[in-house]
Image 1 (cartoon, rainbow, N blue to C red):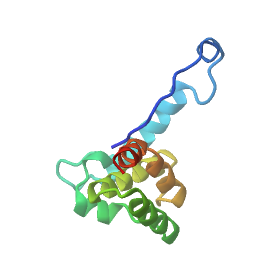
Image 2: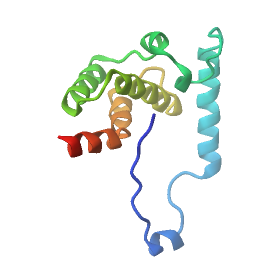
Image 3: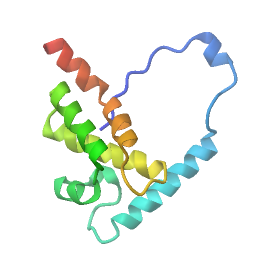
Image 4: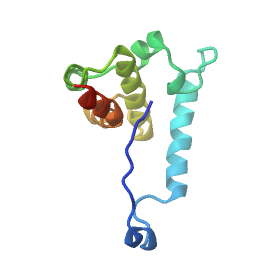
Length: 128
């Protein structure tokens, strides 16, 4: 559900000190997010994480505030994305919120999820 272009890394960047979170911190954040998802879906047969949600469960679980809804509608309209892309963005936004330990999906989570659809944008621009 995530599309990301990764630019080449320079030799200086490869040989420098790593910046950002340590692997241990990231692993712990992921562990907590997965625990939240396991709890959220405990009554759903065969659903263990956000990626497994179908349309009905997405509508139940991925509630956006007004800012997030407006942002997502604009992105879908401007980028010409499909209903499937809409659902995928919602699932990714829910996961971003889980990783940030947020109860609700914020407009910032939606914006980040939209950003991860960059390959969709590129395909639309090339065909248009």
